[in-house]
Length: 301
Image 1 (spheres, helix red, strand yellow):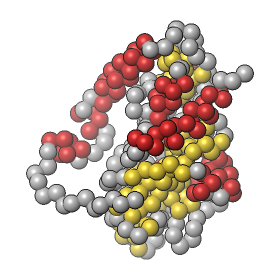
Image 2 (spheres, helix red, strand yellow):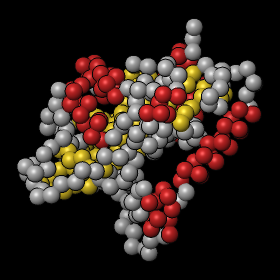
Image 3 (cartoon, one colour):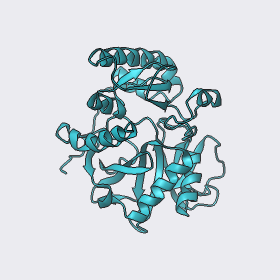
Image 4 (cartoon, helix red, strand yellow):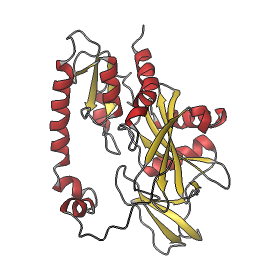
């Protein structure tokens, strides 16, 4: 895993780099993200379905549409499943929403057996609370009394803004969570893992490596690993317990292991995961094969 540290870049930032510095939700509004996603998903569904027979098994998605970058899009291609409109005839329905919260009215429109129908809140505060319930210990800290480094992150999902700060704080915010810094460094790399949950089973996992001190973003190397190599059976049971509590029938969990205590912490729940960033092309089949097999079992009589 020879991944060189990125060189310092002293060039004038490009327009794209400056745009990425704009915080959400303003960046999404300025970039017309919702409209672009709808168009991309619509075009993808048309292309995808054009290659398949009309009687192929179909899957519907709601309230958002499946985009080509989603990991499930790769699985659908491998299985030869069509993307059905919602509402409509489909063998399987998936609650699909890339945001943090699903509106109750949208959840009620889904079939009662839709995957992730109960997973309506993946905000960081909910993840923290349910992980403490599942594992018996918490990653959260009281920022008014915690002394030393801690992590502050927006509660909303997919909003960049994680940073290290020093406690204690005199003033706190309601739109963020405060967490202990989980030291998962291995040498000059920051190590994390991600586990795939499908229908109450751990079906895959991978390691992520990022050069220190890039705790929250930066170049990544992703390598698939058997779940048993990364988590004990007791830890896998904890992960499945957490998934059940948060209503995650399909998705991926970001997991950190603390060097000092060896405890694992779930720090994020992803119900619409994309193809892993930094996954070598030659390792794609190794990654997607177990997921494809697990989804194929869902439609078996």
